[in-house]
Length: 264
Image 1 (cartoon, rainbow, N blue to C red):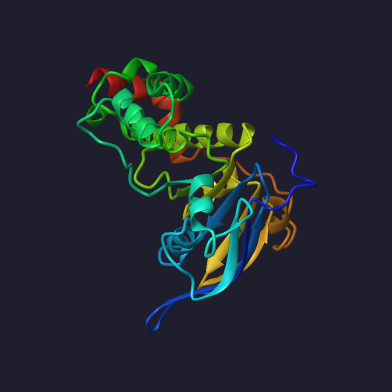
Image 2: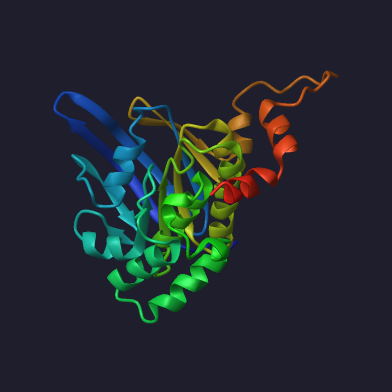
């Protein structure tokens, strides 16, 4: 991962508030995200995660407070912010009538990139979708659709990507595929702000985790730092039973993905 010791935060949020009439969604949110890191914003449904992402991506204005993304103020320099980011929402924004490759070519052309076909082929290879590139996106499995969606978001190499609950509704195998994709992004130097309501997702992926509750960040730290908030664990010898997810993955392995391919 790229060293971030001497670099300014890729994202800085200071005292952000947002209300919708009498509903106070964000009540003074503060945090920094280091460049090249994965930052998980963890909270239950309705905690304000998506609202905050919409503010940081310039789709919504905060009532008070300031935020900078890639060094640009989201309020005074929204155009520069948009050129620096990509946003992947909770639902894949792909055209089911087009093939995977055609979706990528379309986005490359919309971004006025040179050699859109070459870019599409490179992205298909990067996200292990080459074999499915000429199939209609409607035939893709959930994990493949999400990987294609993220690939489309990365055309143009944005330094910062927002992933708003990227694994909602995915099966266990597809979730692991997306997790691996996110890890690879960070290894390549991309800053990732991830919102999730899944505790295991934050634990698996994040360099730092902020817990958003009732419109405020109630804790922010590494996984190790957050674990220190509770009393030290006792050492006991107990029989460890496998989780249902471990059983499922052990039984199906890679066959889940291949079965999905063959059935289409």
